[in-house]
Length: 265
Image (cartoon, rainbow, N blue to C red; front, top):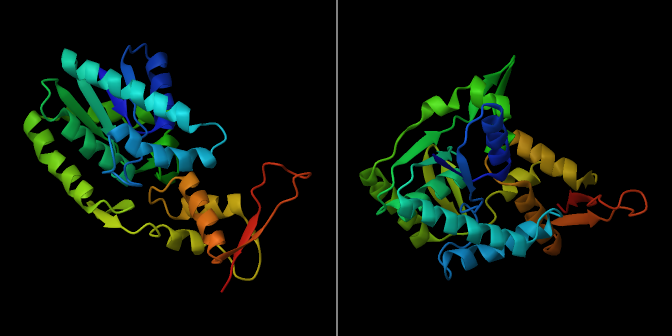
């Protein structure tokens, strides 16, 4: 079985789970973030380059060239697996990133003869005495996979179903707005400033607040699927437009501190 995932952190948890249970499944990771950015320009790999540049600007552990290379290799691996007719299992959720990835992959596999399965991961569940609501599958712990019995959610994804799902991806490409969100189970195209409302609700107009804290609280209070680096990107934009006032941190105190912001109301 070849497992396909759209989240790198979740892939690491699943890989560790397989190691602990001596499962020899192969993983293909495709963190393509198709809920963000242009999805029609050029070929698919070049299409993601601009978004990878934005991500790499705010992630010191990644570079655009490395992400482009990883995507190229993963897509080649997926094509080889599909051509060989090996069974493929797609892990996804109702997060817009996963839904967009799922629809795109259904189009890519629509005419392939490979047996395809899916596991639809729930975003809310009880962990101990707490109700957990995920904003990313990367928040799943490796023991959640066994405790929730996620592999039992597997079901076939027939060729006919894949052909139907691919029309959803074609509709999104036709709209091609900068942001795609899942609202009540329906993917809806939105303008580029859609997530700004959640971010700005955590920014004071009276006092400066640390950027990391603002983003962390936004992610915690609004698990809507936007990654932290996207919020960093939007903060930079809002600062450039005068919506936010920026106070630079002292590099002698903490060189990694991104500074503080407040609203210019």
